[in-house]
Amino acid sequence: MQKSRNSRSPASRGAVVFATPGALDGGGGIGRMTGYIVDQFAESPGAPDTVVLDTRGTGSVALSPFYLAGTLARLSWLLARRRASVVHINVSEKGSFLRKAAVQAVAGLFSCPTVVHLHGASFVEYFESGAFPRAISRWLFDRCGRAVVLGDNWRDYLVQSVGTDPHKIRVLYNAVPDIGADLPAREAPPHGAELSLLVLANLSERKGIGTLLRACQRLKERGQRFHVTIGGGGDIDGYRAMAASLGVAEECRFLGWVSREDAHAHIKSHDVLLLPSTHEGLPMVILEALSAQLPVITTPVGSIPEVLTDGQTARIIPVNDPAALADAIAGLGSDPDLYRKLAENGRRLFLKQFVIDAYAKSLQAVYQEMDRPAAELGTGMDPLAETASASAKASVPRMGGH
Image 1 (cartoon, rainbow, N blue to C red):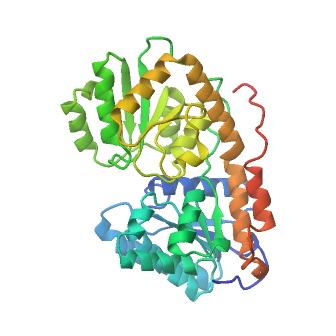
Image 2 (tube, rainbow, N blue to C red):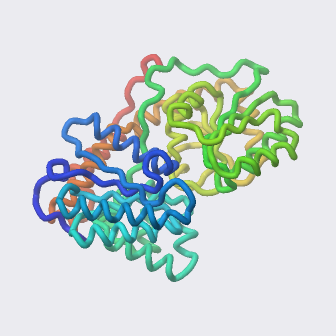
């Protein structure tokens, strides 16, 4: 494990460098999470400066080695001039581990501490797919100063299967800005109204888009009035053709990629968020929906079942089950009490656990842990990090007008 060379905090010594695929605009959920952290640091007195380096690029995958080479050169320049104090490495799975291993190697050459932040929804499948994925994963987690994971299940897997030192792992649930702060209490759709459904995801089977379209077919067959807005890149043409083959093309509107601002506007204006994924970490779109009192229907994958409870803060349905998804949608549309319950409880849960300010403080505390050699082999979370983390789980603020 690498050490900082002096006792000053990272905020006072240099920038935190985020190694992020696609940077802020092309990195999907990882890029969005990085953007939220960067924005919050910029607004927080005493927070470190930030630099975001693109490790993959947003174009053809064939060009990713060139983006990576440029990133490594710039990172070396920053480290050689002591303009960086921590390298925050965002990793998912597959090729991401090769690129981030290179980033870790460069940081190691300059004895710069690193945080490896695991976002990969399919990391378990990647790790267990062969000897090389296991070796590169273990190498990366062995050499980082701290490992940040999205939930207890990921921490347990790193300890039990990957063999990561448990003392270096920190569980930090994702967090987002409060986009629902100024919204009035959300009302349930009127009886018999056309339901406005929302999907914001990269279009793939991992996100359950096929399940969604088959659920739409069932809803239409039973006479439920609805339309679904589908925002995100991926196999748009393929799923548009699938919608047509299922007879729900008129009910489905495919937007393609949407900006952060447009995504927030859709969250505020629709009736239900749908995310019937087969694999997940902790999707930020769910947290944004909770903030805006938008009821969520999703699946018990990744860290979702750690933070959401069926019938209390969301509807949780089985994976790959179009009938269950259709039933959940119709049920929310016909049960105003349940709708209001999910909206209100979701908002309360967001305020208790997913506010970006508390998250940013927890992350800064993790950086500061690595500045103190005594914390390196500690038996638990550093007191500062523990205090900051606990602030995200403090008593629920009063709902006020929400």
